[in-house]
Image (cartoon, rainbow, N blue to C red; front, side, top):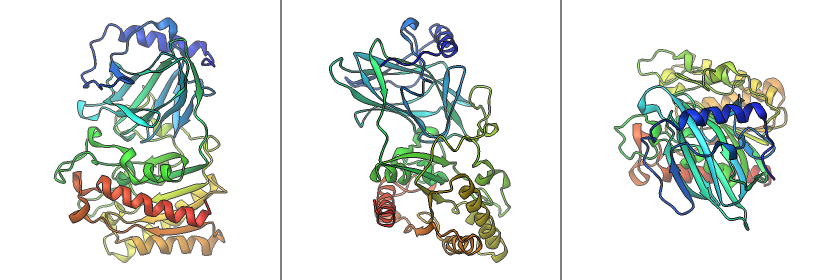
Length: 395
């Protein structure tokens, strides 16, 4: 089945490719495999079909389509589909400010990572070598988070082949969190190093791993440094601009460039597009840098957590909500649990549970940039959380 053609989208994608054809190659290094390759975005525009034909690809996470470009912001956003044909190309552009903020994306073919690149503003292409006799599953996953950069899928060129949406998973899960959920620094084993999109990989985070273990379609709503009442505070002052509940109803948040000329935080999210069975909240690690052990500040966190639970429930009336905390800091664990209890007492809603992650064992499992959890810690945490949800949900 070919992509359903959208005239405006194809025109926009073709014009973009015509502009890109005169640009130099991306300065990202090239992947090397028989199944996938990385190249500059140029080619025969007459074969290009539009990526925004939602009936032909499974769109993953909160995305935005405008003028034929499908924009990816949050960690883990992407497309998932089955391809039958000789060669397929996914043509993309990166939207970012500063060379250190290029968005990172990975290409998977039949579950195996085949390419991993920083997406350039002048165009990057992922290429898949397939077969006209057998379908392969193709997934594009944005590895880095939304605040610093976005990816625009200009078009998907099936080269005369066919593309159909990947099958839906057994369950749906939304995970709300911070840098831990984003996989901050997981590819940088020096704890003295700081944030970089090039070392961030949400697929190595407990969040993505949990979704895989549950066989669940997922949506990640997470930003590094953010919290319920405060972002990370180095001076004890409340960082109100990084309160995630303010933007839970939006498609994302951009510090610099957004989806082309559109800022993600100006776009309302349609909660009918993804209805989760389970919602996991992992927020409080950054709040703890502000609250410390001060009772009034902890009470502010608890009260605001209750308000956030009400906000989530309004948008997701049937989901089981799991309030989680731990891994890097345990100072607010009991306050988080008290917030869940207070919410149930006030509303009568008992479709909620709490789960505490064990603190990371950095001596045995390692730590990465800015003392964040390693891939090993993420794997252990995901197994614990997935087992807890499976048992609780009867999955």
